[in-house]
Amino acid sequence: MKKINLLSTLLIVSLALTKVGAQAPAPKSAGYEGPNKLNTWALTITPALTQFYGDLRQHDFKLGPEEHLTGGLGLGLHKQITPIFGASLNFWTGNLNGSKERLYNAHFETKGFLQTSINAHANLKPILFGYNKLKRWKWDVYVGYGYMWYNSRVYRLGTNKSVELIRTNTNASSKTAGEWERDGSTYTREIVFPIGSAIHFEVSPRIDIGLDFTLNHVNSEKLDVTYGGGGGEQYARQDIWLFNRGDSKQDKWGSIGLGITYKIGKSAVMAKKDAKGNWVHDPAKGRYHLRYTNPLDLIAPPYNPTMNDADSIAKANMPKPVDPRLYTDSDGDGVADLFDKEPSTPSNSIVSGGGVAMDLEKYIKDIIAKNLPKEECEAMFGNIEFDTDKAIIKDPSQQILKQVIDLLNLRPNCRAVIIGHTDARASDNYNIQLSKRRVEAAKRYMIRNGMQDPSRIMVEYYGELRPISDNKSTTGMSRNRRVEIRILPMNDLRSPYPAGFRTGRKKDQEPGKVAKEPRKRRN
Image 1 (cartoon, rainbow, N blue to C red):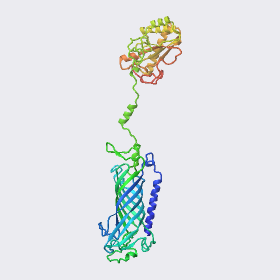
Image 2 (cartoon, rainbow, N blue to C red):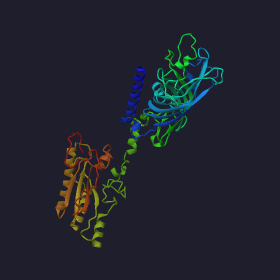
Image 3 (cartoon, rainbow, N blue to C red):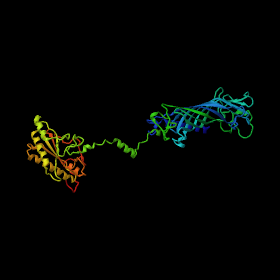
Image 4 (tube, one colour):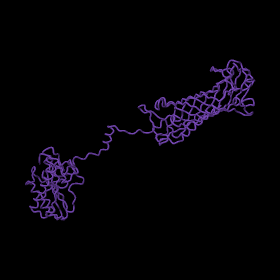
């Protein structure tokens, strides 16, 4: 008895620790305690066939004299703690019988016995096969501790139950060997240790069906109100009343039944296969049951893009290409094709801000004729040509400068901005200085030829930093060698270039900031 009590105590402590572990908060990696909730409760009903194993049993797997099939009904409330471990509270009721001619010539019946137990479960399927193989199956083994209440009666064989030899729960029966039961008690109570295995299949998000095999070890050899003495001697029938401690093994009863499980919980769903045959879990569709689901499957794997994915993302987020017309000036009038309303004006034409060719003399006469207010200034563009690597103004360009002088003398509220550029056939420092010499030559020419207020002439020089064509052809380099003239109001001190306008291979370089990159040839 001390050994039995010690085993009972150890089992109760183990179940208590399991329950405490289930209540303790799980780490964040456990999905069912994190944002992806899982259902964990289930209710199982098990109609089953029952079988007694003890002294009053032939043990030949056949029905003996005056025996018949017996059955029972089980009800279990399951709590899944992890995908592998769980616990259940179980209730059983049913009947048992058995008979034996040799030695005893008796048979017994137990009707309406009751049993309750707490079982600890271990799911072997993920341990043996993993989570994704046999996904719909669950194979539990379990062991438990509980109590059984029964009332058994023994009859003489061949008397059609007319001769009752003994029953439990009378003044002549005992609870266990050596202990006498009080007269008038309805049931005898014994400790029971259920051990079993159950195989379940997930039919739907709510229903599982399976087989349940259980063998219940009763802590007594008196379930059939009979003890065995062993050996070959014939016991006298009256020895049944004595309830001496025999040398036979303790009684057992087993069951095999069809288990139908209803999975309790909100928004129940189950995993499905995709076109590639992989199991797919989508927490947004509902809650999966922990009986069949690894919580890690609900955590989306980190996205590691491939090179093709990275290229696709880069292309999708790439800004739209800049209109190439912003960087081209087909007619060389100083106005980019994107803004040029007349992209084919003749060379050396004086144009407006929209690239439209202007007759400067007629324009001046029109201004005078219309007596326009002196405060107004019209933006005009013109190119002053120079020979390669020289700062001497050509004759056609001298005529343009004279017309600009006449206009500025008529418009005291206007100013002229002279802007110099070169091609790329020299170092940056040399090109900056060459463009500077050219704009200063144009300014000196205007002062010497009648400009009344030299302070209204301003110069800018950029060297090769702002090309309007490529520097790979003779034509392109010729277009880049230019000096532009713009007429602007005196109160407008902004750069004559549009905001953000930058071209050339050194986008952020300002005039005078020279890169030391030597070149052998000059403009």
